[in-house]
Each structure stands twice: as structure tokens, then as C-alpha cells.
Image 1 (cartoon, protein in one colour):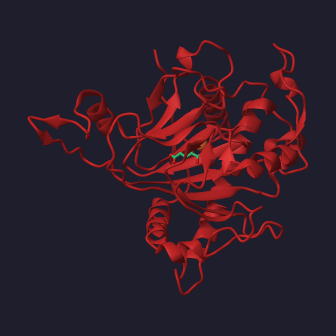
Image 2 (cartoon, helix red, strand yellow):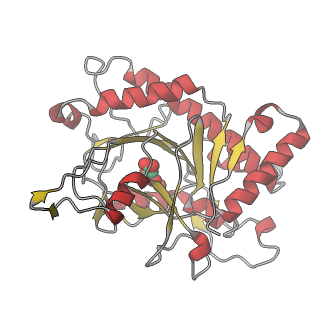
Length: 344
Ligand SMILES: O=C(O)CCC(=O)C(=O)O
Ligand SMILES: [Fe+2]
């Protein structure tokens, strides 16, 4: 049976008893160990703020090309600021998206590139605030994972994320009126860091690899002929998934499941069953409904740069460490330096 993404109510963890917290920690542990993805509801970030974030994103991407060019990264070594469609590649496949990325406003080492206040008054203030709301949720989830593994407060995951050097990414996939069937908006990859939060609009298209169809153990490798399962957008939820470093930290217990963004199911079905837009029927060319634009908001968390990621002892009881220790900062620097052409 292909897995479905478990839906988990986070409220009992936020404001429940000690036993409620333990129950949610064990549900999340189980879900990340099997699927690597969850859909979290009652996550604590107010819906009006999530809605506002999508509205700001629409306004940002509606700016003119020259206005958007004014917020391109201040220096090639920064990934913060605006990137256009095709700027980013994953294993030589272009990402059909434009995005705006920013880091922790309290980090004075990595600068953000903001549109001027004249261009988008209030955008910076809102986005900085939303960044902190997401950081708070990440820290709660890290507490939850620490509880699941019964880590002491000294060793808890939160200790290794004290600087919250996270990245917020507003993403826009423009509408496409090309033939349907096989459209990939964001090629298959797994994320780099600890946990990713993902808010998606109602269009759909996010898919995760069906790990039940895998021939090999370990989820990060992209296999040929991989089957993918659609993650239906559910209002009021945030998708949470495991990144590569957390997978290594947990000695493979939590899966950094491969995922991608394809065309939404309805368009995919048209492509499979219906005519191609180059086709003609009775001499007339066939028009296929354009794939609608899609917005998503991703939030990538990662450990502080000095952290050494070494399999936790409690995750090595049944099997020895599968990977050598690595330094989180060095790993992330290398990975980010390979963007725009990355093999995430
Ligand atoms: O846009 C999405 O739904 C997914 C984005 C994603 O997976 C990523 O940027 O790493
Ligand atoms: Fe991703």
C-alpha cells in the first residue's frame, strides 16, 4: 500500500498535559520514521498570518521585471533575495519557479535583500515577523523530537539551533500553457537541513516518493522509475518534512524523503488520457487548459554551523552508525554554494 502523509493535530503538544505531549511526540516519531512527511494542523501560526503571507507573495511577484531585478542577491555568495524562473537547477533540470529568500533578521552576518519601502511598504516588517513565527514552530517541533528520543536538555535538538539560522522562501510557479503530461515544476530532491515547513495554496502538485516501491533502503537517493504520491493541499495545515542532516543525525531513523512539484492531478490526468496540445482532432488543433500558477512558502531549518552531526547514541542501539560525523556549517556552505545548479 502506498503511504499517505499522516495528519497530526499539534494542539495537544502545545497546550496539553505531559502525557499528551508524549503521545504527539511518539505519533510524529512514527510518521517521520515511515513517511518522512506529516501534515500538521493546529500548529499555532494563526491562519490570518499565513493568508497574509500568500497575499504579500502575490504582490511581490507581481512587481515588474526591473523592480524584481533590484532585489536580486546583493552578492553572488548570498542566496538571499529574488531569483527568477530558470535561475535554479537541480541536476541540470530547471526549476520553473521564481522565489524570494530571506534569513534570520537578527543574524548580522548574512544580509537580506529587501525591496525598498516605496516599492512594497510593509513587506519587510511583515516578513520579518512571519520568519520569527516559523522559527518558534520549528523550536517546538525540535522539542517534540527531543522528547520522542528522550534526549536530556543538554543534548536536545534545540540547543543546536540556538541561532535559528533558517531560511524563508516565498515561491511562485507561474502558469504554464504547454502540453500537459510530465510537467515538472520543481525536480525531485530532498532538503538539506533539519526540518522544513511548507505552506501550499490550493492548486496542488507537491508529490513525495513512494518509499514502499523502493528497491533500496534509505530514502534520499532518487531512483529511476520512482513512483510519486500527491500530497493533497489541506487548508489550515503545514507540511513538515525531514532534511538530510536530521536523517543522518537520527542514523536514518527519520526519512529525508525525496519530493518534487509536478502538475496538479487534474492536469496530469488530462496529459495521460487526453490529447496533447500539439494534436489535432478532425483537423482542428486542440487547446488544453493552462496549468494554473501556484504559490508556496517554504521554511528551511538547519543546525548552527559549529554543530557536528554524528548519529545519536539512542539511534544506534540496533545498528551501528551508518555515516561518519560531519560539520553542519561546512556541509551547508558547500551545498548552498552549488545553487543555482544543485544536486540537493
Ligand atoms: O513548492 C513546493 O511545494 C515545494 C518546494 C520544495 O520542496 C523546496 O523548495 O525545497
Ligand atoms: Fe524541498
